Image 1 (cartoon, one colour):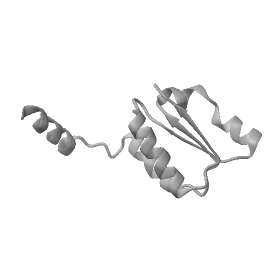
Image 2 (image 1 turned 180 degrees about the vertical axis):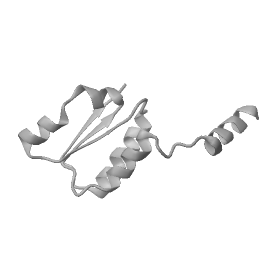
Image 3 (image 1 turned 90 degrees about the horizontal axis):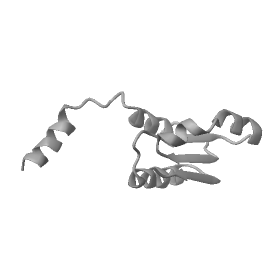
Image 4 (image 1 turned 60 degrees about the vertical axis):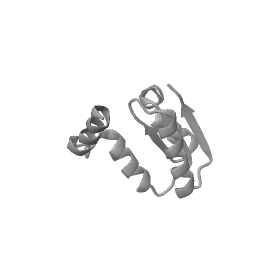
Length: 95
């Protein structure tokens, strides 16, 4: 009982409106085009220079990586992005 109450109050009392993952999902919905999608934990976000890839390939890249992103969250992002955009390539970085 205590654990469920703890999760409830965590959901109600924590202000995550400025959280990176929330902002990233908001940006996902506001793209004109996505050719290449990178999804996964934060290591993916810090290990590749995406600007160079965009310059060399001419393709639009979106990085949907966040700290501690779990595989189920990555799958949900991939499904949503596929529904919204005509994505050519998806790169998934697991933990």
